[in-house]
Amino acid sequence: IATVVGPCTEFDQQNPALCLNPSGQPQTSTITTIVDFMVHVIYAGFTGLPPTASCSNGDSGLPRGSLVCNNQPLLTVPTSVQRFICGEPNQFTVTAQDGIGNDKSISIPEGAFAIRHRQQLVLEGAYPTDPANLPSFPLTDAQCCIRSYAAFNATIPGPNKASGVFRWHPVCERLEDNVLYGYAGRHRLDVFSACFVSVDEAAYDAWGGKLTSPPGCVGIHLLRCTKPTVSLAATSSPAANETTRTYTVFVATNITFHLNASDDVQTRHLRIDSTADPGVPAVGSQWHDPGCSASSPPSGPVVCNPSTRAFTFSAELVHAGSITHLCFEAVNDQVECPRYRANTGPQALTQHAGPGITVSQASEPLCVFLDVPGPIIEWIHPSPGEGTTITTYMGCPLEMAFAAIDLGNYFDLQIYPTPGVALPEGISLESDVCSFRSGVPRPERVAQGIGRCPAVTRLLKWVPSRRQTGLRARVCMEASSQGGQASRRCFFFHVGKCRYCAQHGETLHALADSFGTDWLQLWSANAQLPDPAALDLYHLLNIGSLYPARAGDSLASLGQRFRTSILALKEANPEITSETQELRDGQLICVLGGMCNVAEYGPPP
Image 1: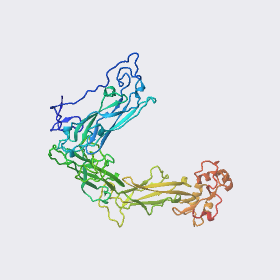
Image 2: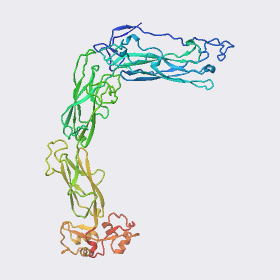
Image 3: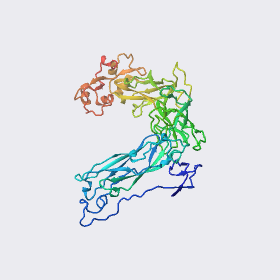
Image 4: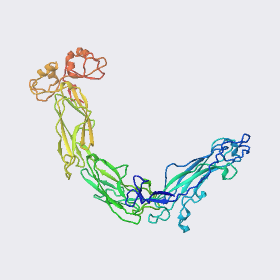
């Protein structure tokens, strides 16, 4: 007779071993129960054989199964509590290994040992009297276990093993009925302990002569689990695609999902949440307070079942251009039941157990897709084409515009140099000039990053210096939204050699002096000039000849050949740093001497 805490109305969710009273507080009263047990003689405690006796001859005078002549079999059972669910098959495996004795002849003739179910789990009187309602329960060894026998022979030394599978398909009953089982919690129908022994059957005498292992017991919690359902009651915006549950949410707008959840009345607390994977967006997500329905069924008070809850997603710039996968679930308070198992068939919203439903704490997920359109950025005229080359010359002012639009006429854009790609020295950029696409309605919303600048233009200005003649540079510009979406446009600047744009007040005499040549040579190269003393502002002048270098050429050899100074050649070709530097075959060199008015002064290719 034992005294234990009880009765238990339910068990604590965080600590299932804690017994709670009807008020939900730890139970302090006690109940008295009868514990049934049995005593089984494992071995008689013999310590040795007579001096002339042996186990193999059978003249020891001791049972063949005594520990003097054999070893106990070893039994292995699960050490953790096994949680069986009513209404479905459950099982665990028990294994045994025969202990090998000092005298191997005890294994002859060939024998076997098996795992046996020690005793019934519940008394027969606890079952309904109607045979049609009898539970599927292992009443005998034959119903309990599928045994595999291991044969052994003295000529083949080694361990002999057997295994047994304990199977049970318990019937379910409603908590209010409380007939078949000793109800022990909101979803725990009963608690059992199944015990097993392994028996060495090699001996030929009765039970008293067979070695039996100490019993191994396994705790079984019999659970009645159900599965909640979650449904979408309403949304603040219709779905763009009902089949895939895809909802379009523009930046600076939001959408609210109104969710309903329900479960069997044995569930006292039911909550609606998002699944851990994929979760909810870190930005723009808001759960509203749940709505709970309470009731008082015979099985006990229900606090929050069914329940409702709303979730709002607000699209921000960080979401632009993304499709978010979002899943909702309902989770009940049946903490000993499996967290989630997928159904094998359809489940009606009011059905929480039955065919096709694989019971678990969590419902089947309800998933939606949130499509947040991003900008569609396009470069337009007069932006330079991708990969094109823009040619200019020393002293010539260059102005070029970059223009980009969001085809949706929604997102604000900006234009700036691509980070990590340096602009040539001397380039300046004007501020962005914003506008709206013509012929397209203006955005209805104005917020951060939208509604103010869906079309943008930016002006680049540059006057290449004399030190930049011959320069070839790759330049990249970005047209970007504030959300980070960008379109890149790359092109090349080339500063041609031997040509120069006249500045204010310059004459051929002054230019000849600055370039180390003669004004007559400049005039002969620019025969279209009517007056060498009066040059138009930014007039493009030829100041030398382009010579394709050959292998072995250097500034010194070219200076002798063309009767010009090395200093003048270095001034006209700043990429050459040493007068002894060997030139590449085909490298174009600007030579300021021996000019003629020939076709080589025409527009460069």
